[in-house]
Amino acid sequence: MTNINTYGQALPASLPQSSLLDTNGNTVNPRDQIRTAPVTLLVFFATYDTPWSDNVKIAKQVNQDMTKDGVRVIAIDEEETQGTVTAFVATEGLTFTVLRDKDGSFLRPIGTPHGVEQMILVDNSGNILARPEGKSDSIAAIKEALRGQGKH
Image 1: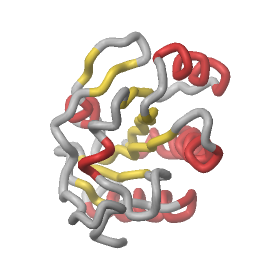
Image 2: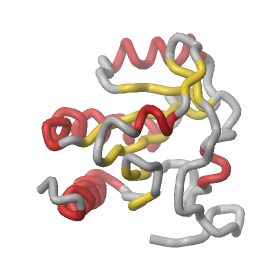
Image 3: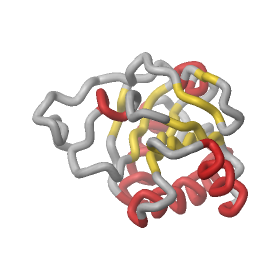
Image 4: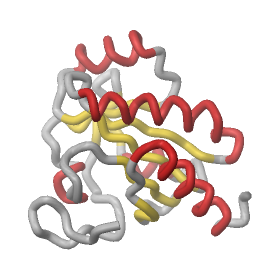
C-alpha cells in the first residue's frame, strides 16, 4: 500500500469528518454509519466510469458473502446528482447503503494513490485499515481485519 496520494500528500490514518448525502438527499455522517459493524468496506464509484462501477460489483459480492461475518458495505458516489444515483441504485438492485459525495469533499482529503477508483476498509472508529485493489485484495484485507478483531 502506498502512503502518498495523487496530490503528493501523505494519506490520512482515518476518515475525514465530512458529511455525505443519502439517496433521499438527507445529510448523514459516515462515521455514524460505520459504527454498526466491526469493519466496513467503503466503495467509491461513479455511474459513468467503468472501473468505478466495477467496484460496485465487488461491493455487491462482498455484501452478499460477508455480511454474516459482520462486514458492512457502503458505496459512495462521487459528484453525481441524486437522480442519477437513485436510478443507478434501482437499476443495479443495490441493497447496501449508498451515499453521495456531491462535491468530492469526502474523497479529496483521503486521497487516492492510483487514480479515483478506490476502496477503503475501515474499522468502526473510522481508522483506515487497508486500501484494497480489486476483489481478491478486498476479500483478503477484510478477512485479515476480521481476524485481527477475533471475528474469523
